[in-house]
Amino acid sequence: MSASPVPADSSSAPSREIVLSRDFDAPRELVWEAMTSPEHVVHWWGPQGFRTEIEVMEVRPGGAWIHTMVGPDGTRYPNKSIFRDVVRPERIVYVHGGRREGGPGVGFVATWTFDALAPRRTRVTLRMEFRSAADRDFVVREFGAVEGGRQTLARLDEFLSDAPLVVERELAAPVDVVWQALTDLAHLRRWYFPQLSAFAARVGFETEFTVSHAGRDFVHRWRVTAVLPLQRLAYAWGYAGYPGGSVVTFHLAPAGAGTRLTLVHRGLASFRPELHPELAPANFRTGWTELCAALGRYVTALGVPAAVPPFVVAREFAAPLALVWQAWTERDHLARWFGPAGFAMTVEKFDLRPGGVCHFRLDAPDGTAMWARFAYREIVPQEKIVWIHAFSDPDGGLGRHPLSDETWPRQLLATATFAARDGRTVVTVSWVPLDADTDELRTFEKHRGSMQQGWSGSLDRLTHLLGQP
Image (cartoon, rainbow, N blue to C red; front, side):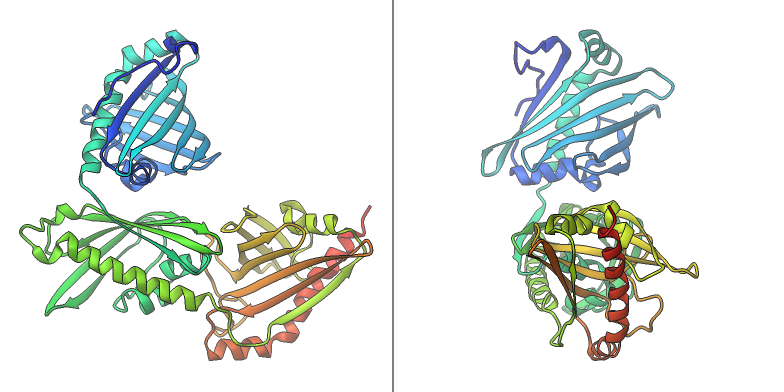
């Protein structure tokens, strides 16, 4: 392995650059995860003797990475980066700004590239481009950037040498359904651990429960360390009475109509399996393989709509298809018409793509506030939108209907289809409960009239909006 600064392109003013490269005996996906998941980055980022405190790390275009590096002498180095380009698992580009607390700031554009040299070998190249040669020289002189970069990559190598357990599986259910199964307590108890008494997908949440196996009790201790809705969930995993600690991370990504699950369990060696053979990595691999299979079976059934007739409402608009589609798919337009008559919609998040979420608040005329969300499954431009329609909370979690009892279905599979007809547009909306029990199905049937009233109010408002010049 090597880590040395080399000019990447002699024609691009190398005096303004620092380039570091190192080869790792690890597959590219694993190296990518170690460098982009905050629960892993905190364990190796920075030169020897440094530690890193991460406030936020959202590795996506426009996402921020805000962290503070703390030196051996206690000096703090605040840093903020904004990601420009993220191509998993090939390239990351971000604009960086940092400084010594109380000192002058520095800035550069960083590019990380990940080259697969073999199935289990990866070359990482870090390129830092400064505004001038003077800026580069200042960082090398004042911060020891070259040697610090070498030491940082060496720490990453040490971190990767503790080979994690990785299980990958294709699940026959969309991302929102898998996320629900991983984060909702009622679902977790059905396929995962029935002993769980509490769980919340919230960083810092802690829980403890006991599992009996082979005549022994194992007290599990979890602490949630990372939550990126519909993408990543991580928690620290340890046992009372045993040394060490580990981190389990669930990564989700759309794969056609289904989901690619990558489970990574890192830190198993810290359990000292040579002294505690019951915690040997092979046992964890067997357990995770069986649990991922159970999750696959569960979400396949969970994603199937309930066997009840859907609620259907249709409306023909005196407007062209392109204009009606725009009213459904642009944030500001949607906020002007969605919701029953008299309600005001405030959109907190709008990410119109399969796997994306629209999270919003509806304010009733009497001042009552209701939160809801659309978790998009399928989008066919000017033809169809499919989403999971659910009540929510201010943080985007799954909630219950605030004006109904506990038997209203927690989630509805919603489909809106669009058809052009002689310069006009017909929109048809259908709702059907997802993973509903008998009481919820009865409530759904009972409230078809109120559903008709609510949707009619929204579509009346849309008719009015489309009629405006």
